[in-house]
Length: 176
Image (cartoon, rainbow, N blue to C red; front, side, top):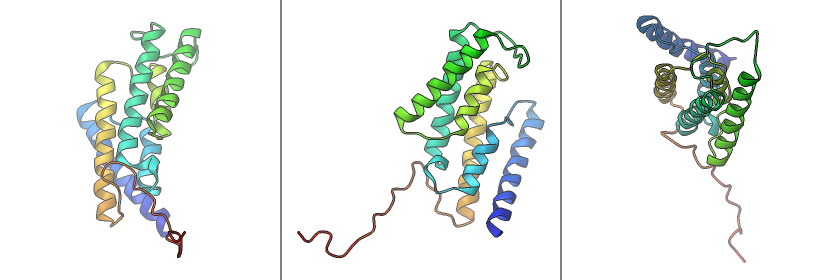
């Protein structure tokens, strides 16, 4: 019960700050995949999917893959239309997700919310270079705030990569 409350309060506080930035700048600092990223940072902060490296680089893979999908299918200047999806839009989304999934697996950077980020871009919801930079800046900000909040809560949140699991020591394991 306490964990649910503290997770909720931390996510709320951080999203209020990011939302305030979005309101003040008129830029899309709030976007859907920030929600599951915040959940990972505050509900499961010690899991590899929540570490700063996987969060930042996973979303970077998603952004680049989404842009590649748009470019490949000639949609860089095409506004979004979620109710009349074309073959080109479906192709851009499928390619972007495939590149994101493959890229994260290849680079060993699991961060599932990046799959949503790539679709947001490939579907054209955020597609300009300025939008893509704001998405990445928002992820950097969320990661920094997540680091600060978790460390203030005395959670040993990693600085960059996931912490290596500690292998149990068994008596006689080295006796051969």
